[in-house]
Length: 389
Image (tube, rainbow, N blue to C red):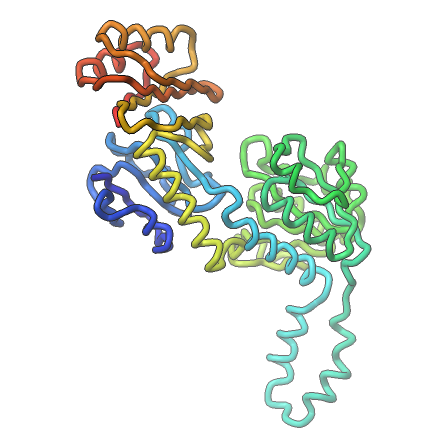
């Protein structure tokens, strides 16, 4: 029986992918094998020795102590693309509300015209000129980051008649295949900044992107540029954005990550972190997280991990499977193979992959792997975790 702890409310359609005859699921549970969460901050949470995997029902993992998990051999999954359509649709909405003063107009009608009775239609006609705006068709949109969300946003904007420029030096093959031929590739971020009327951010928040949009980058933009940030607040330096808004360099800043500073700035449209807040997105993320967790716990396969390599191996019903996480150093495979051979255990199938400083092995054997053998492999210098499935 596997024990799964949920640190946030997870859509039932996802948890139903974990059959209850083999899984116990609860918000409070002792010695969990896996944790599924959304935005819960795990950094101050003690990681139990039983923990084998953490699945984030979403793309961002800055709420999870990745380094600590890696040191303990805990695989961390996320769900890239599961909420992509929901975020894409909000990005398109952000393009429109940053161009047309829809929010200001609605607030004016609801607040200023309240109790005006039969005068409302005439007042609307007189006041509508205060809420004019611009059309997005024919304007240039720069997409920074062409992952699942960036690609969908770029394609949708191109279909709406925008000229779209994309920048991503690390674009994956799958993403490139899905990108509309209408999207023009920018060879440098600076080129995109200089040419775009709108800029939409779809990059992860990591060390190299923290504060990426600062005074220097903003100074390269067109005067009156509109910037949309549905990725992470920390990508933008607040004080620099404030100065750009006050000078008119940035005409409007739409952010899904408001804080006490940003909500006081002029020409900011603060959204309450609703990028993936659709029923469909939450369901899709929960399903993907649960499926990845189950495949790892039951088969040792890894897909969409942020700290371990992608590894999978078809399983024979007659074999015993052992999985090993170790430091990516020389002679590890040789020592592991020798330990199995010394015990008279034959390897029928094996796959070894590495990612940065971590390596992971799936080994199928023709006979059972005893606790003594597990202990000998665990004692090899550099081995982080060993599991017999």
